[in-house]
Image (cartoon, rainbow, N blue to C red; front, side, top):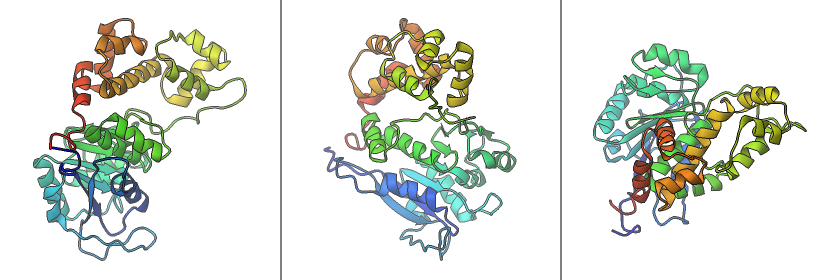
Amino acid sequence: MSAHNAPRPLVCLIAYDGLCAFEYGICLEVFGLPRPEFAHWYDLAIIAGEPGPLRSIGGLSVSAEDGLDRLMDADVVLVPGWRGVDSPVPRDLTEALCAVHARGARVASICSGAFVLAAAGLLDGRRATTHWRYANALSKACPQARIDPSILYTDDRGVMTSAGSAAGIDLCLHIVRQDFGVAVANAVARRLVLPAHRDGAQPQILAMPVPHEKGGRIAPLLDHMRARPDESWSVIRMAEVSGLSRRTFARRFKDATGRTPLVWLTQMRTDEARNILESTNMQVADVASSVGFHSVEAFRRAFRARHGISPSEAHHGGEHQDRWAVSN
């Protein structure tokens, strides 16, 4: 089936009274904006999560053409925040979310939307996150879940959660990557003027922004390392390139990235390897070498620890990633 004739994945976006406008706008921007540069894209439906009138924060009226019964056609359901951590969630909404997930659709939340998924019981036994301010409240609301307030987003067996506001963009790009592959997700990120990919494990809060002070530039070092992942990067060399003493460098690097230099380096290399595997036909051994691993076995272990799959599985998934344009 050609890309032009294949069914388009349906994203259903839940609207409710007291709608979080920024989170809602993120979903509209990623999934609802026309993208003529692609042969195939999503259909977006706005779903009334409860009887109207529906208004966003600020008093804007929201028109939802579809009711909860439309969810049964969804491939992805998005909950863009919630009006309050203590605000009850309508039973009709929670039952509909459970039903659509049981049918096989992915269900995702941004920020406080995790409380809706918790009310539906979809977080039980799963790892989840939300804005760091709400993490304790979510743990109390859903003690059966493993709440991690230190990360940007999670994806646990088709139930996805993200941290505050902007982290929702990273989660949306993660969904695009699942459906259409790394090249398309990166193209969307470029149009949004965003980095191509921030992994879900990145910390929500950094002790300080990436420093740009004269004589101690961490950000240019990171760019330099990303451009040359195959080179030997000892901590001594990193400190020299950044113009800092080794002790000062180690402290400022951790403050800026939330990780030690060698952990960040390994994760960066495996992330770059995944991009290559999903977008090229390079052999696993060649990919390992191209991103700085001298042992294929060490590469396989690091890759699986980082991504939860083997390099071969990522390679296979990349070859068939655009499932909506081809196999459906």
